[in-house]
Image (cartoon, rainbow over the protein chains, first blue to last red):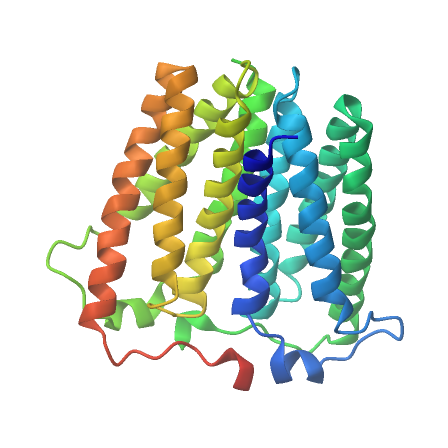
Length: 159
Length: 159
């Protein structure tokens, strides 16, 4: 594996992951109703850091292989949607609008898992924890929308 | 060019571009001091739509070529940073934090332009308007930071 390529894909995940530091969970998130099975707060950064390392590894393994065009397109889609979700949920506080973003992200990660797997088993496997975590995140997002029906998004246009 | 591949790269740009619709410019942006040379408001969506179409075209042309690994890594980095900038500027209203994001985006677009150009002249050319526009956007971002020294970012953690 090309280490420079790994660092470039890692840079892309860093851009997406920066949203986690820039958009704080804070009091608002604490105050939301959550399902009983909500993962503990400390698990989120641990899970995301591991996932980002794994998918940078997967991208770097696959990028140089013949026939990687679709895998690379899905890699790009998932990182753009990944960067989008946090600002919609924690920035806009838009529990409803974050659902379609999460569904698109889930589909993109599934597409990335399949297309990477077809080229390289290790790269495909590296996407599996991501797919599992996004499944949990989607269920959590949906559950929080249901449990907080009166929660209004931030009205940025009039602030 | 593979049309399916073009649509996948376009989907990635759509995710980044969605920030433009989700994070409104609104009254806050209107109230900011701007340099005399600020582009008119209507130009922004026109420029971004053209750029997104062009870079989806560039990605689709290059993805299938041998030796496209670095071009694809830069394509992924630029779209993640592209999705990040709008929420930092228009969501957090963080004029200062948006500067390093913009500088990283500029570098990523330069990297994408060069690596695409090395493989395919048309793909490289398709990135040139993006590089030009991001140069203008960076100058505008910097100028607005200087012209609005007392502007405070949104304190989401305590809202």
